[in-house]
Image (cartoon, rainbow, N blue to C red; front, side, top):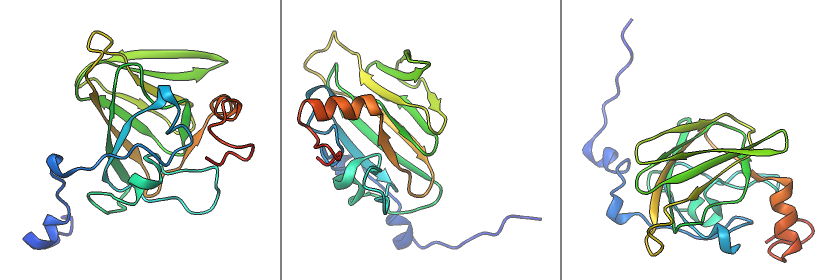
Length: 186
């Protein structure tokens, strides 16, 4: 049996086009946003609505970017970009869904925690790593030979409204250095 088809006008389809030159990056709205080693801009291209309820949960792109998706849909996946300087990237965190990374430029270290240790793969342009739900993970631009350049990483996260939660160690560090309060508010 053939799949059903849908007629979409050019005007309707235009709402589903994101021109790279028009994307706006945001650098806030997550517990680690102001932490020096976590400085980055997140570009919300497809989806990433703000999760409702539990204050410990965040949109993977942060509150500001969650409000400004270039393509505002909820169809089972979300897509965005991270732009960061060498040595920068988010602290350890996890999601309730899959997260897949693909460097666009530069080299990126994609790390995860297992049995109290940190494992990692360094990836270059067009390499891909896919983390399953619930794994503590992070990514960091490791293109140290270009200290004045930022580089780009594409990320895809499954689900209609994925949630992000920072690891207990990351939250403890943010609290100890005054970036979040005892309840985790920033």
